[in-house]
Image (cartoon, rainbow, N blue to C red):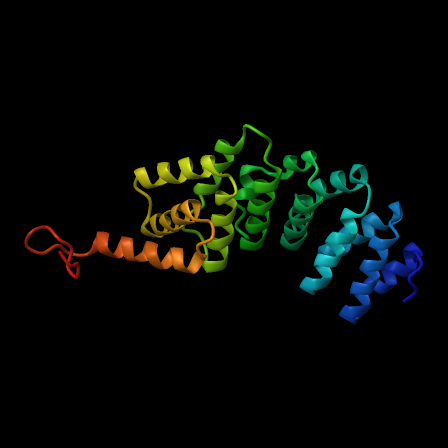
Length: 230
């Protein structure tokens, strides 16, 4: 592919090529030579592109274009019926970093039933949250504690940790209530990461599981949990 700016029709053809490297090169060229006419193609392709690396390059290419054009279109895409379109739009809004991107962060998207959409929403929310709204966001995020597999929980914990004191206070409120066992374990792991962001998530989860296990263990004479050493 030529390194010169392609026509819109040529870019469309290349982005639909069966070769992932060809599609990636097309996205790279579109970002290197921004053109207002490319925006619709790039955002539309994000919704259907099967290759992760190509999607990431498409996101980069979109960030190279004028925010005044890309952000309104991404806000529309974030409400798409297509989960991949929603996820990629939210991810791209977090990379663009424009304040207007916060409009995409709603209670519905933070609790989206599709895990990939929710993960993108959590990450975007932590980046785009306006000053002063961190406590409100932290409460919304901690309401999702206990959800999903290890990768989903890792993403949520990272978003909560990014909120600092607001995240810590929200986790404390969850633990002071009566959360499910899964939510309690996840909250304890997140609490450890808030205290030491350099601790690995797996290690934090292991420690949290041990705390929950000891809490649920039957007691023996003297009131100690079975298996503990006095």
